[in-house]
Image (cartoon, rainbow over all chains, first blue to last red; front, side, top):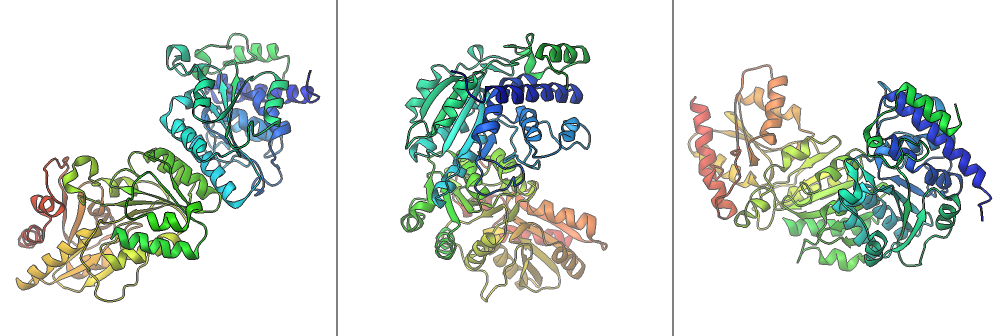
Length: 274
Length: 307
């Protein structure tokens, strides 16, 4: 059954993708493939799941959202601009001299909880926030969106063990599991499979979903924690570069930027020109 | 000194419910009273310093004060990027505490020598760097560290350090404490090497050299005013630290003198040479090997005077 919000998600995800193409084209910068792969996840998170308020980005009761794959920050900037955290005009300054938006995600931007950029930093901090929230009896949740590269880092596994030990069920890790990292497909670099079994063995509740299927994303994120007394881990199977045919599942779209001709073709494929 | 640290922290934690200890399986025999009294504010993350620092940062981002605690280099170098990107960049209220600064764990070997920490911590934006020299400073520094809103690096001694200050001290972050007046030159030290410096000053006094002594318990922000004043009043400065000669207290003082002192000043940095200390021995034996015992310091000071 399709989600009632399907159209909303689709529209927002399209806008995120279009912004990301423009931003990386304008900034002559990379990581567009990592942005495109998580666009659908961000659309559902910001349209329906996260309790955040663009008028009050520091609202104490907000859900905390940490993007640990900071290189994909452009996509979060795009969704925050669409949701009214800051003017869309700022997106045009992405990566540029005296710009408002840095290549990796920055907490100097309204709506951004935490700056990252080096992998393996997001989850430990999210765990600390989960600890503090539980200590204070706060009801908000802490979400951490990671990449497969994040899961190569030892610090991520340190945090996985610690969160399970203390049963932080206010903590939700989501992996944008596009299976492509900077220098290759993960099967040729560091294979994470059997991923869900590993995470489960480490004491988390795990669910695997199609990270481009709105109904599956919405269903998984609407029923949290996945299991009481355990942190939740959602492995969202995605396609790197999703939405632009020649980028999909390629290593080159990690670092490659988008030239004028590619931008026009990509926008045409998406059926949009904003 | 580590006992004074833990005792003082526990006292403050009784008054301040925002204080959390996040540590990485180090502190046996010292941290148990805090753990017992505040089990919901005490977390041992296991042997995982990166996670310790990240978790502490997350706890601090939520309006708390998080203490990370371990020995020697463990809470600094293993997790340096977490300190830089997570703690310092976000100006998070995390206090990084090491037990056993310098060569305190002498015989344990290079892995346990914290001898580059001042230079490395000093280079991080937003970081305050403190190295108390005796129990009085150690105690006051805990309170100052908690009152300061932002990252602090606290280089604690180990045990059985000797007292330097005989009277009440006025401890302020960034303000050197004058231990003794003297007109011939100024000895500036940081941390527990201070006791050797006092003894060296006593030896020099007998030889007719009257040393002014400054305890530079805060290496960053450095007390520029006190350094310039001492240079202008005494005309000669010697810095003494239990640290690699590069980039620590001596480097900081040299920067101040080179840029800010108008008169000619004789200057010498004393510290460990830029080598891995692979000799085996206790803290005092090792210090003597590198001329940082009272006699060694005295000789270096005399050499400077006589040049």
